Amino acid sequence: MIIKSLKSLYVNNKDINLYNNFNILRLLAALQVVYRHTVEHLHIKNEMALSVSSIISYFPGVPVFFFISGYLITMSYEKNPDIKEYTKNRALRIFPGLYMSFFIGILILWYFDQFSGVSNMQIVPWMVAQLSFFQFYNPEFIRDFGVGVINGSLWTISVELSFYIILPFLYMWLQKNFSKRVSVLLTISFGFYYYIHEISTNTLIYEKLIRSSILPYLFYFLFGMTMYKYRKKLLKYIENKVVFYFGLYILVSTIHTNLFLYDVLKQVIFSAFMFSFVFSYRSLSNKIVGNNDFTYGVYIYHMLIVNVMVEKGISGGVQNLMTVLVLSLACGVLSYFLVEKPFLKMKKRSLFKQIHKNN
Image (cartoon, rainbow, N blue to C red; front, side, top):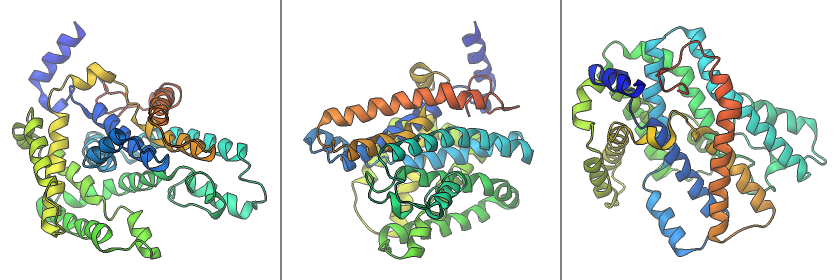
């Protein structure tokens, strides 16, 4: 009865988007990152595993996170622009899970005796950075542990938090002449993206800082914002057309060139493909993961698992790849139900509260 009512509501008001594939898209993006990192750091040599890694490299997970954030966080802010509540909701979404993973990371480093002989002047700044907005900071005393970074994936948290901070100002500034102003920002961000990926040697300090900032990734977030703003007009060109956009993206991905405009086109088509995936076969996500979003836990714990295995000298073999995938999924489930969800319930309002209580 409830499902029928929700379907009826969806038919009458598509803008509510009660049925979509955001959760499953996020989970697939996280698993892509886990898979690629595991193959790389555990030196998996299995031919099939390497082939899969090569194929999924065309569908990078991190840009998916930024794109989805642009769409969903804009929606959340537009529905409730109260800054205090907006800040509280964003903090509840990020920090409880982040702090728990940091605590477990501390325990891992302590177990492997990484703090021995390390002064507080080294430890405290690192702890402050990890618990605030500078998760990309990596001190010297961790460089000889595991892969050299206890949880290297967390650099994206810094970028994500930066998006959260600038969104209210960005939203307000873009209200007047949206298309022209967003085009200027897209061009600037694409310029930084092209520089980092095609020109930069990534050896200079300022290049590393740019790579860890929002500048080369802002265009993904802006794509999400734009998709949300023009969703009613775009939906008829996107909905249930995921096969078409998948084929189009595969086509452009097979052409290798360093041309700036071609790279722009590829990213636009990739964003269209993601958007179409979200609004095609809408019941897919609900059937697989329901209203639960295990993505965050999968993402923030997988490198802790990989680091432990590297430190233990465990490498190679498909069984180790599967172990990381299974343990990461288990951590994602546990993190969601034991840490994230209890704090998310503290939100006064929640995006898609009818069924998406975790957004």
